[in-house]
Length: 107
Length: 153
Image 1 (cartoon, rainbow over the protein chains, first blue to last red):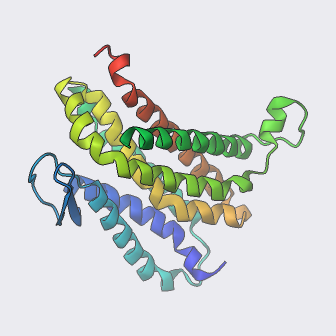
Image 2 (cartoon, chains in turn purple, orange):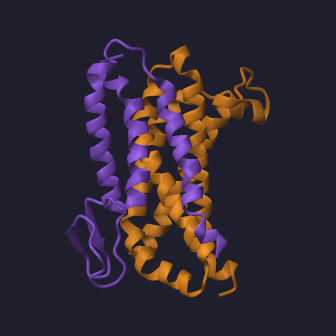
Image 3 (spheres, rainbow over the protein chains, first blue to last red):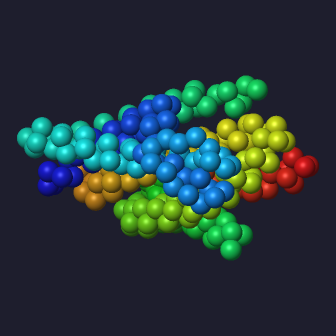
């Protein structure tokens, strides 16, 4: 197994963590305004119709997880692949999603 | 065009649903015998589904992302006006699960590419998680697509 592949569990864990933080704190790198089909940098309030941040959260998470993986790469070189990291962290994040979005079901 | 894309999104989701379910069953409940439907269903090689699942997941997610603005502007507004907040919340959860799944794809590919004993539990876990994500996304999408009929609106 080459060394880049050893970072995949780290990427998986970092992506899930950064994603849920991005959703909760709204760290979108760009905003899409679907009604008028316009893009804006970072988080923007509504121009006309509801703004969409999901695409921006995905970009934030992808770039963040890539950065974490690059930083972790030399540290993982002489270590076994941390398989557990790649699924336990996303699993915990998935469970936490139910908690963060509970208000929709309690109204 | 939007209707065509929604139908295509749904059809590809059905293909993904079948593929990931087959893989999940084969990895958690394998069989060496191929006698009978149940055994034959479980006796398949789980690895052959990996690339198809990855491609289908990306394509289905991309199609969903393409038609998402229509949902956000028109459908979600309608649901909120109808006070169907649980339906809106279900879609929100689906959206987050799909995103987490996208981030797990390289790891999913890794654990299946070289089935080492050390990655056995990870292989089972990540496959089951993908299976859950796909089933959840499919059911929520299907219910929302038929929400007016289901709720008599």
